[in-house]
Image 1: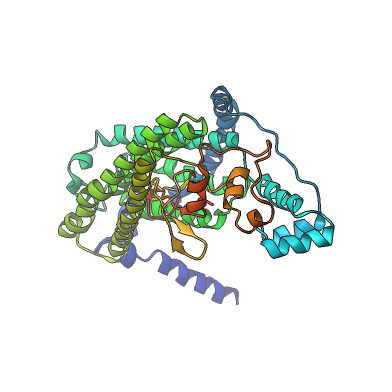
Image 2: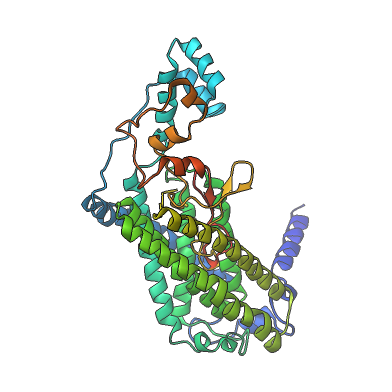
Length: 449
């Protein structure tokens, strides 16, 4: 039995690392074990160093949010509000957790008779209970400031490093002598830090405030990690570094716009969003196909020829380009509506949903609603799909307004930047998706409930 199991594992391992899939013809893994300059050739075992580094990145994030981001938020006038706890009620809690968070008119009347409460009180209970699970603006500001800082730093590092490389100026150098391309120290650090950051996001999802897009974001981070790892093991790190840097170029702009929105600097928020939109479309619809896809599809075909993992790699990049077109269309709709209204409303919600590079495109938006219907991304929500304020819920309440009209928001509820009632009611429930650094394809997916 043990021998059979070992044999099966051996076959699986051999299939997983098949040279026919991973490498060009007449190249073997043994050929890449020899000495080379710098850090040698990329190897799968290098990925093991990512895990302790990801834990370190997460620890740095906690310290950053507490000792740097929080004081900045307080200085910007964002209050450290106290969470309002609703009155404990087993019947309403059961309905809230297992049936619906938005009871209709008939259910409200039934609960009112059962509990001997008036409908107005039950409406307020459900509204406060929904808000109870959502982080305050201060928390979202700290998270966005951490992401802004990382995205800006890693982009500056990437552009500074790539500026001195030959393949930044001549993409044919990405395939010169491939796969015998030794890994430089700077390129190794660039890949490992990007990968560690996304592993840290995987860790933080389980201890952060639970968001409605938890599963979508989990899949997104997993896809991003897989794509970055794939390009590293396959030694396509030169073109992979170009894709990461290209996608990182707009991530920090979106986070900066969200920070301005949380701090209620509306004019700055509008300006940053316009800049983000322009950079996003230029890099995704112009530079990416003319620069990246041109070299991966045509120059690589001419210099090294196709092989199984080459087809897989380019299939992912082409899929990413399709998503770029969708995201750009949605952003254009947002910008157009903002120009008509004279105001862009970016609101907290993750985009972190616009992904970034080779496997995690940077800030991008995919708006989804309830039953799979597409809607323009609500600009008033940021990409973390996390918070809805009580005033928003009042505007969106359909059956409840018939019972007891609109109610003003309780002081304990958090305003999430600038909001417009009619605008929110019009575009409620949109969901946005963002990518990660390597293949921006996936959604950093985030909902804007």
